[in-house]
Image (tube, rainbow, N blue to C red; front, side):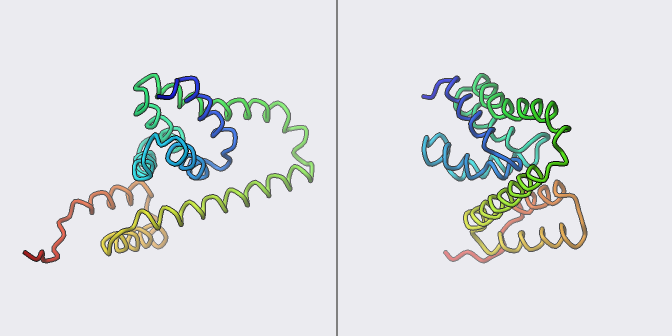
Length: 179
């Protein structure tokens, strides 16, 4: 079993190298928690991200909290959560102290542009990976298409769409069953 300190340090490392929010953290979390340490399954990770999307707060923090709680209860939750948010707090304090003096620097603007592009690539990779593992049936494709239409054409809230998709999972499957 992993120690609380090591749990904190691992999520601290993830927090340092994750630019762009919770979705950008998903590939790192998958690599560390699922593949390397085998704390959780890939399906559990997707479930944590799904629940994290529906609950208040930052997805990466919610996912870290769920994993920490699974591993060590409330102390694991605190350790993982503090680990993932500590780098952001330190970086924000540092940036607030220094950035205002250098905001017009062209090199800094180029660096931010490069970071944005890499974050987009990470998110696209994650979406493709989640697509392959998350949609396993015709019903899943139908829910995806309807959710996309509701989101892009009718500009409905993503929270409302997630709730509708969850409820649609309870609708009975009317396909005839062979006996």
